[in-house]
Length: 410
Image 1 (cartoon, rainbow, N blue to C red):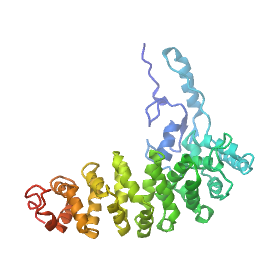
Image 2 (cartoon, helix red, strand yellow; image 1 turned 120 degrees about the horizontal axis):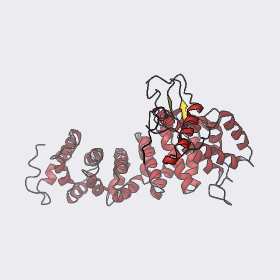
Image 3 (tube, rainbow, N blue to C red; image 1 turned 180 degrees about the vertical axis):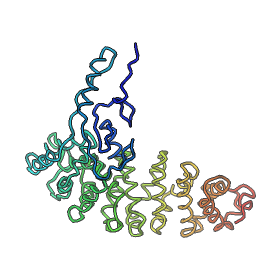
């Protein structure tokens, strides 16, 4: 078959593929809509990919109808060569359409239908997602979540999902901008986190997953004031999501939420009191995925900076063993955090029985190995300090090969 040469002006400068929905931006360059939307909205770039000119003054995507028709005609002419004509793309939603749907959604009879339409619109493209962040939309969606109606249901009922579940799915699907997330945080006089906590307490598995994943996005741009105001029930529900292992995404989000919450002492205590340490150790026993293990070890390190956290780790039969096992097996970050955990235990909670347990579990031998490999100067320094703390108790043990400890100057 003779090779067909696609006209160069049919090609998107980003994907280098033929455009299906060409749009022109303020710099005069034309791109395929899907690609330029990803560049601007998902990748959060504010320059033209070709000219590098700033787009801060306004992002307008003007459909290049003439070029699209040329491309469609060319596809039709070359159909005998296997070129398929693509359908005319559906135009993005307009702000008046969103405002109309929001008005309809305020009617109890129309609410579920309108929410389903909004979810469908959000799933089509990034431009629709950003349009739905228009003034009034976030406030309305947040008001549904903040409505503490005891009769509200979260599970499926007569074939329909609850309004809160539908709203959560929309909010998660929108992949909100920083401004959109801030609007949610401030909604209901700052009660939105508590509203999500209630969803995690009473909702279905899927609703709880949406809630914690939305929390994760919010905590990435949150202020210390918000984090310090978290109540005990918040930690109860986030840890329960971890315990239930609803999905990998929900587990990752729960870990990230707790990591954002636990740089503060009072939050570490609250998290420790909910059995977070036991859940993390149990999950680490079966987890091999690098990023998940890193998050768990980061969180364990944070919690072990409190006396309550260290006590919980030592009370778990496999606590010290699993932390030691992860050294040199996950990543450089994982090893650093695991060694830091052992350093906290060794420095602040090293009873004679703990010191002997570290020896019998092979922790001491692992620390000696750390001194021999390339795992970062800080990790080596902490490993050396641990060995120095208890060199007298470990030096004559038959569990360590001859001269293993004596070969390192402490």
